[in-house]
Image (cartoon, rainbow over all chains, first blue to last red):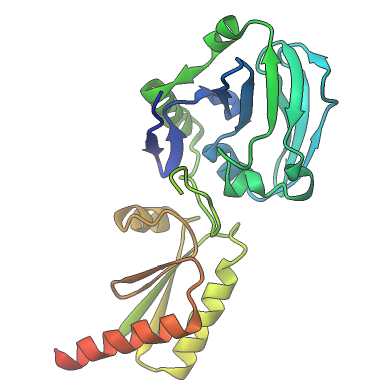
Length: 160
Length: 89
């Protein structure tokens, strides 16, 4: 699928990713049917400067909804939850020393974890993609009165 | 008058560098005026949208746009160009 950049209130939404809007989570389906996940552009703006990321053990099994990482910013601290039941196969260790990568490159270098889900097809039911994701984000931002996204110097735009 | 507009946001770590640089310019050149535009305000976000500002800091010397902290020499050069345009008018 070709990736298109969709702007929603200055926030970048990539059309080929899947989103769990309420949790500000994106996921990308890899060739081996594992998934890579991370925080969205909206999340990095809302959280502010991200300071610390810590991970739960890799190669362990997590039920859907269990915390697999903790992200701490200047004004927010919260878990990244397993989007579906499965095995955490890798984490982005670069975030241990440079958590700000999530702010600067939320969809590329700032990925958080790779996960091997038990049932990808069923798990994707809770996600939206493409234009539907953009519309859902627009509604969420309006409902929660979220600010437009801010990209600080060094931000890696998807087509950079 | 040459207007230098600096788009900033409180979370931006390099924005203070851009602001300091433009302040220095204002101090040494009475023809230069600085306008700070914070994307933390509704007005700032509207202005950013209108000018398609996607990241901060972004600095405008009238119509010349610098994305990121500009080099001092490039900033001076942009001001010099704008002065030349003003002189012709």
